[in-house]
Length: 379
Image (cartoon, rainbow, N blue to C red):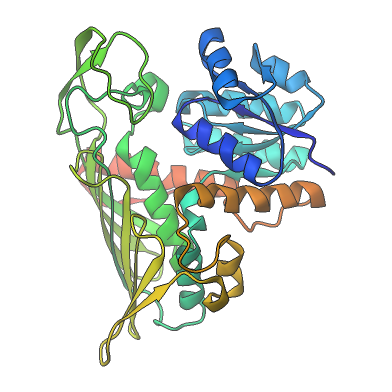
């Protein structure tokens, strides 16, 4: 089927990225919906879309809308996605897919019943050098991965005056840093290695124990210096240390933090096998580090002419023309839209099933931190 138009729920930082990236695929964004009439109208004006929707029901009833992107607060994902798919809309949902693996499984079942194309927005898989690393592993160029170290570090919640809806459990869920960014790192490692997480040992930290919450709304990655504030006690994680056992016996040690000054968006990992190692950092996304034991290490630069076929599909510019965060969304969306047009799910991108697997892992991480013991990931 042809895609008529898309709608986006959410007009904050990530909602804006979705709108811009959708447009780069050639699909029209007809309208947006935000948390209030005021924010919806403001978002529609700023993003220059035709329609400021009054409700989710209005999107469901709009026959022009083929696909809807859900970028609302986490607690709204499950009910919104359910209503959209029951109305016959294809859905791209930001992670986490839901607040629990059970809710996520309900959405997978609904997607199977309706036959609608569905995607969980683990966009960071779509850095070209991440796809290239996956090709290296599949070609057995480093051998079977056996040890992995990684971190996902940011600094945007370092200060006690930093605030965002992700700090509110009723909107974001029990987990914060692990659900928000740790899920991306674990998904990316699984995508590259093909390994399945079997057990976790986690230590979740709440190191900024009290925050000064503005009385007015605050957008992600913005600093509010004008609002009145109130003291709020924190319980969710702003950092974490996690040990991982994979089903093949491989091991990983990862660190998650949103309070690491100077690290803006560092998704960093190193994957080691018996024949060599691979390393990537999203703050330097044009390069893949290749480590050797008996000869000089290598740096592979992004150049579509030198990449594998799969990696080259996610590279939109010639070598030396830097691509980054926004292109990862475009790479994902183009594959989703191709499936909508072809009328079938290709599984060339993360689906709702991947979203459920992520929730199963983060559920185990939360349980492990509470028990202080190794916890199996329940399928």
